[in-house]
Length: 229
Image (cartoon, rainbow, N blue to C red; front, top):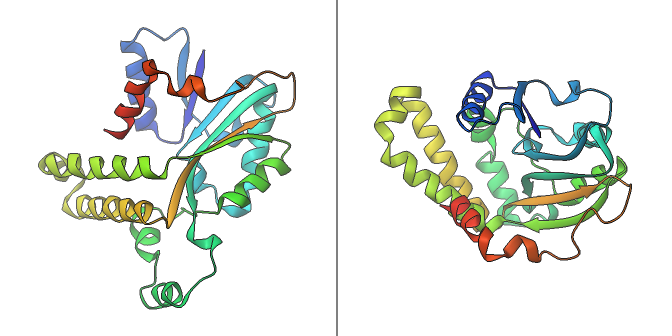
């Protein structure tokens, strides 16, 4: 059984239609809801957060992880999938300082794409998660995978330019085409990364397999190929 939450009514409508098409209404549902408004009772065995972490902000990370901790049953798992800042963990050399000062790096994203976005180093996220009571069980970097993903997204967007422009206009089309191309470069050059951070709420042992072997069995390869294609 699965419950999805989103702040986007359009996203919820699309997900609800797909659930209906698959005949999964008794087992799955999607709600328009702020994650902080979830019930107090520990109701879930597992929680996955995908593409949300980047919009939480460093000051609200403790609240974010505390909420996930609260809604999980003892022994439950939380998978936090999100983009992290790699460059901020390194000593800022002259080239980085000049780029940030002269080119006003990040202003394009803040103004046109993600005005509420903020990337943080992995260490800060781990500290906030463990401060909320979680135990870190696994961290996997998918940085190279996301380079491929973004390059495919750009090619697909360009192939359907007319449809995209008709939906959102030429300016928005150009902004997102540029944003995704720049992001692919940032992932490829190691300025940003993306990780899957698996956390466990203390409880009964044995909730996590002893190895990653189950992730890479042949029957799962199609999923990885699909994600990169």
